[in-house]
Image 1 (spheres, one colour):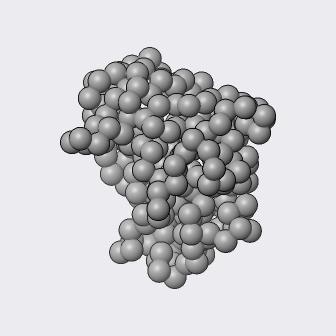
Image 2: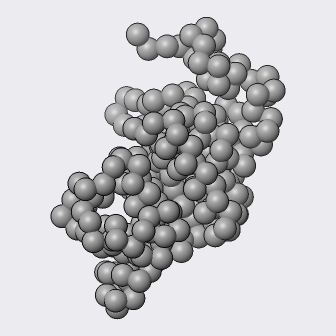
Length: 248
């Protein structure tokens, strides 16, 4: 569904992606791991067309991600942002239905509200939450609203950017389980970027380790602990010793 072909991207003298090659199969959940500043977010933004690679190619369902009708292209995606990224001035249901109230996916207002309430139910929130504002919600509830928004338009592809950042371990587990259930239920292709290993084990079908601008290892999540790859082994164990230098 998503293919990176030798993708390079630099910002001035800083080389971030240095030949990323990766296939994300249709209907599977790929989790890209790596330390902070290794280019995970740059890879995700490149798929969305927010960043243009210097060289190489990104294909989505066989089509070049940088060509064609970009609005129609983006309509195929949903995204759960790292910080929730909810609009403070809008009630919850309008946050969830944001794409359904405007643009090419626009629905009648009453229908958009019904869909929003249905999606809120799917993530475990009751209809009375719909008319609250984000400031009235806990962090875990805000994350659920963000997830409801990501699936509101029934996208084919869903991106998850550090989905458990800022959550306690129990709520992180709840969100991970919800993500896994929803991705399987929808048959969506999922791409997650994270450094939270509990998320990796809960969400992933396959894992890719990004370091020094390239994919150092990729394979099924079940093979992760016995990969023999020194970069992956060090990252999983959290050891200061290994090929990945700790920034001090």
